[in-house]
Length: 354
Image (cartoon, rainbow, N blue to C red; front, side, top):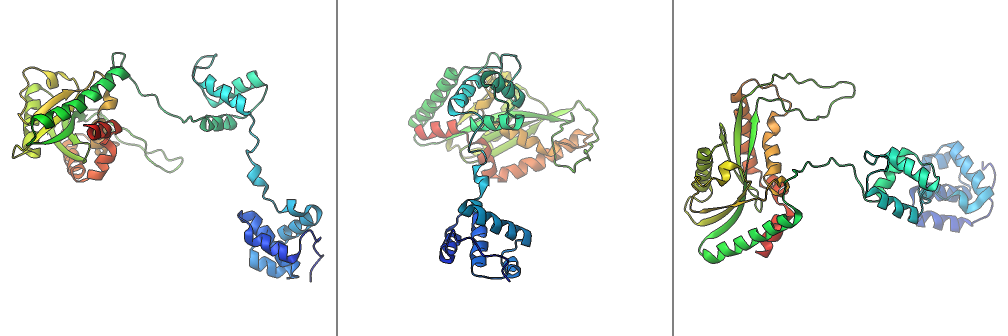
């Protein structure tokens, strides 16, 4: 039996049409219930057909009888539609975020709360303050350390232009050679503990047994950002003589028939720039501007090479070398993975323009 009839805010046909046209899931379910109820279908069957309980269905019918269509509307769509700060206040907040807080330190949710209360007399929660960071285009980031003597933006742009011009020049001078752009770096890896965050069950902090050691090896890394090709050489230290060895082995591996001209970008370490360094004929060295690791596509690859030793209990340098060998062999086949790490946008731009 039907408990009570619906107030005729809509006909049965109109209710059915509203149910079919509804785009929001909650509103669609409510129109469905009302349409079924208007057709004098027993509540127990409506429960079976819609999955809603008797109390929910009864409350909807009472609300609809009192308020009509307003009772069907999903009010959650209004959440956040009336922000605490108007457009002008948000613009002022964005300008304030470009400078440190007046009380010193750095911007945080609490600092934004204090500013908003002082400037506009509005109290907001720290959660709301953080939502304004996101709304205004901010995200939590760890600052990147930068050396005081690092090259300026203008100097870095000049370097990129120089590399593009060098590629053109090499192509014109050696039309019979294939020109490739590679980047080189070294990574020191040893028995010093390397701890990184890992997923673990709550309340059960993992423990890694460690013993600090003072033995290292160096991985000489060569990468072609455009293709993801790599070449690695593990040596006991860094020096001019070992750099010569690394360049010679790299030259033989990448260009055994002498059909290429390789432009190799590398940092300004002494063993890279020494006048005593002997460089194979098919390799042209080009130094990065001073203190600009962010320009080098080989930098992220150094961390990737070291991944197997993170959170490991290692007591012998031979164990380190074995893990590095396995990782270098794997990375040598992972072209797409390496390309995604090392194909920097500035490399793409100069290569396409050269």
